[in-house]
Image (cartoon, rainbow over all chains, first blue to last red; front, top):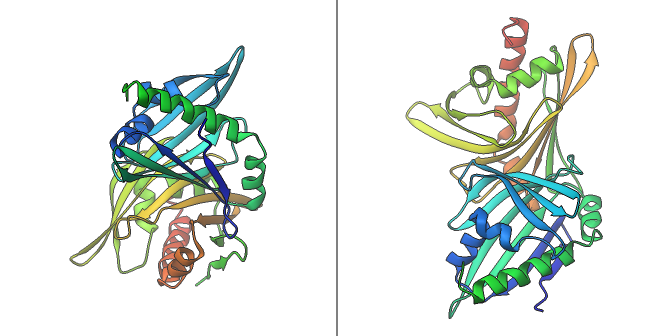
Length: 157
Length: 157
């Protein structure tokens, strides 16, 4: 499985994720803004995603629930900018409602139908950022992106 | 005129503004979420505010234009959280659309009908933060809050 590069910035409380995909920037944008596509790949293999609300436009908002057996985990945010150049959105896990991240996603065209995804998550303290890094986030990130790889291979994005 | 305390955090790219008001937390929340009230006090004395869009709820969004003679300056963002405990919103000056701040406003009850406003603006680099501090923002902040003082004195909030 291709591993995403997950980096903690030294100077600011940011996590940066970099990952290459065999898809165009347009396909990557679609995979992050179309709710039916997003639900098919987001998160670890042990959860399924139920979209509760989704309005991917500047000033819109979103909410989804990750379901694992009888457990449900809510996530929500608003879209400050929903493409085409980038996605800028807020992000909160409702189990920790005080923590809000500002996420910025850009899609670097590598040519030949390949794209490098750059995802930046900014929070307001290094403590919050480091707690997030220690939460096991890389499993969800990597398993999710592997599912997105499969969707791109099947050309369903 | 009461000056707001405007501080640059040493460790993270945050501007913190602190200002006391002769109003309750509920009045301060209203002054920041009711568009007709907000337009009456926001910004420097040389501009007027036209509300273009305003939907103060979790997942809503806002846009306003600051008008100075023939010049117009657009600002926009989305409300991640629109009270009652706090306001968390994104903020962009449309003249610099790449810059997005994540703002958090809380209203500390000082008793006797007084409130301390804490406003935190988080951006993704110290360069952006320091450019903002050098932009003359304190004029707009202080003149705006003086207008809000007047509204509170007139009890129209």
